[in-house]
Image (cartoon, rainbow, N blue to C red; front, side):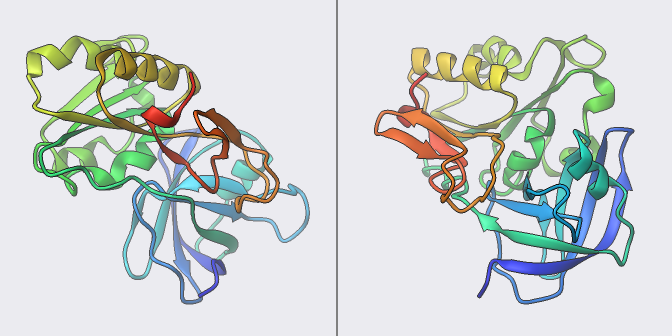
Length: 254
């Protein structure tokens, strides 16, 4: 079954002036995704913009795929302006998703900004005691809260400006809370901006806590051919699109 396929826009919800949820209905048989995998989307039938844009899968069922889109440039502007019935070119699912937690582990999800799209499928699905630490710049950029609260009561909000929840980022909230929560055998699953991930890696390594990080990288091909999205690991450079986007924290060279 080909991972190249066409889809039709079945919904486009504008959450704010910068974020929208794109709901797509594949027009051909497609491979079912797993949490943490991603797709490359292209709205234009021309070569402008040339490259597809990568997006983590947010939600899916037998008929639809959903993506959280943040407006950044021409490609995402085209995706933001798509209307029901429009056609879109897709490649995916790509990469390796999150592994299942071990039976004795308690998953801790950490999301910053649009990183919530990557960990969202894990909420309420991998472990009844799963906890989510979710941070954003301010309260207006915290999305899907009503949906999240239907899946878990263990949600810890943070904002950089303190407009909702803890003042600081999701990693700072996690560090402050971890001892008080007395979580048995925590295992972290995370996605977010570069600075947040760097701080999280440092903390996990210092505490010896296992974890899995999904990296947000620009990429051209998405299938491991162009080597445009490599990161440094203990086994040399690896491709985020092919060997990732999810990596075991023990692999990563900080």
